[in-house]
Image: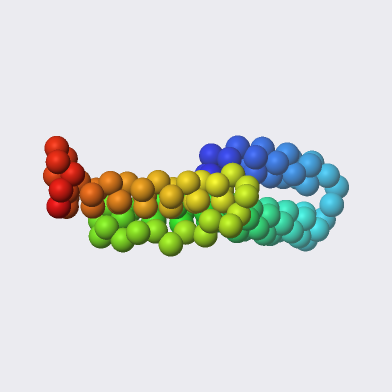
Length: 117
């Protein structure tokens, strides 16, 4: 994220600074232009980070559910009603963990050779 921010904003701000410095604006106007540009890039970055946080929320929930199962053997309670890729990821993860848990419980409680408890 930092690389993307620096890769887009440093050239943009450098070009803007060059334009402002080489223009015949007064010093006060130059400072205002640069401050407005900095504020706009910071607001844009904050909005982008907020959007990415929301877009990655299903992946984060799935990761946390897997960690919870691995550490505490708690079955996941992920939403499974969504039909987009993230929803399918959560539904498949939930289904797979529940099936794996059933197999683990069966193997722990039944004899593999006879099938008896």
